[in-house]
Image (tube, rainbow, N blue to C red; front, side, top):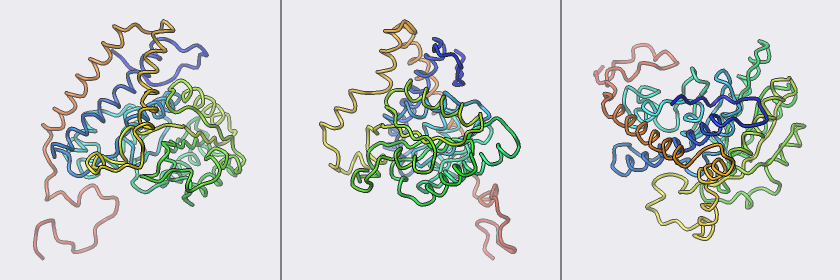
Length: 344
């Protein structure tokens, strides 16, 4: 089955595109499910930040982009890369620290990048992707390229100075940037309402750009907000801020599953899980006649096979050679630096 996340400009969503939205959300969820297993089995060293529950944001936003548009990602970035067309095998290989990974096993979960498909890198520094997106957008505008840059960040970044500097810069220069706040309600364990008064989208409006808030559990709502924002950016009218109200179904990172933290109530978790974005979209497609139950089951089966093959690829890929540890660096090593493992 051929899947293309690029959007049709029709006001009526074509059935193949609707099914592709489901495919990409299911793909992200199954990927994260397998990541947890691999972490628990110690095949992935350390921890990862799961994207489960937030799939509608990445897929809805990237559904309005073209392959030439770019995104900057976050520490919780698996979903962004996969929604933009990332390869699951290379993703798993990177997490398993194998040479077949996107960064040849050197970057790991928080630093996956693929410039070829417009992924200008995940980033472990909160809010740090925003100025990078502005830099790309400035180039697009200067070169008169009809391209858009998207900066993803969480609600924990909303008080970071670098984000506000980037928004101000984008506004005064009318840069083709879309700022996407994935408001999953918590910065690690701190509720957003305890550290800021105004909603993020309201604060963004003070920079003179449109600030909108959408249901981040509804892929269709996110997609239409993104479509409006991309059309504005491509027409030279500048940036847009989209706040997506969403929720992560598990802890801040995989290790939290074993820490018995209780900053979220079971009632809250149950309430948000009733609004699972994948289930909601499957039901809406069937009710609208865009997809039958059998087609959804076929997509699920296809995704499961893709995930299994991705893990097989990662496991068969060799680990990095210690002698090549200093290769692929942006900076030239200091003079007279001894080779890895060789005493001076």
